Amino acid sequence: QVQLVESGGELVQAGGSLRLSCVASGIASRRSFADYGAGWFRQSPGKEREFVAAIDRSGDPNVARALKGRFTISRDNAKNTVILQLNSLNPEDTAVYYCALDPAGSSAHFSNRYTYWGQGTQVTVSS
Image 1 (cartoon, one colour):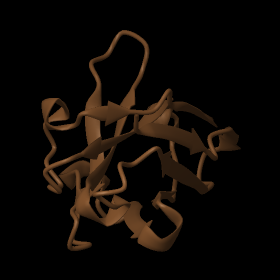
Image 2: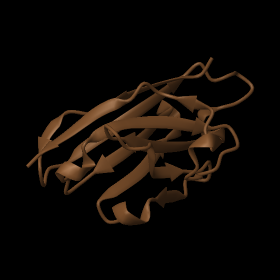
Image 3: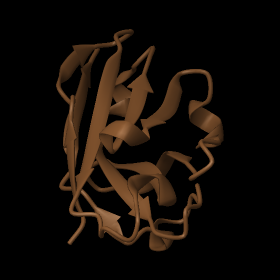
Image 4: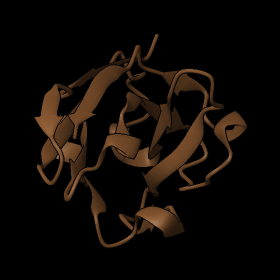
C-alpha cells in the first residue's frame, strides 16, 4: 500500500519561506515513483481543499495561477520525493498542506484524480 509522509510545515512569519517534502513508500515493484503524478493541495478551517501545485511524470509542473511566482514544485524520483517550495508567505497561506499521487501520472488540479493521500503538514503564517 502506497504511503505518503509530508514534512516541513511550521510556524513562520509573513514574508518567510518554507520547503515542504513528501516521501512516498510502498510502491509496487512493477511500478516506480516516477510513473506517478504528484500534487499538493491545502485546506484551511472552514474552506474546501484547494489545488496548490502538481508535477506530472515527465516533470512538467502545474502551479495554481494565484500562486505562481511564489510557489514552485519539483520532484526527485531517486528519493521518491516531491518538494513544494513556498516563498513570500502571507497569513492567507495558513493551511494544512497535503501531498497526493495520481497513478495516471498527470498534474491535474482535480483532487478526485489522486488516489493516495498523506496526512498533511500544518503551515501557519503569522502577520
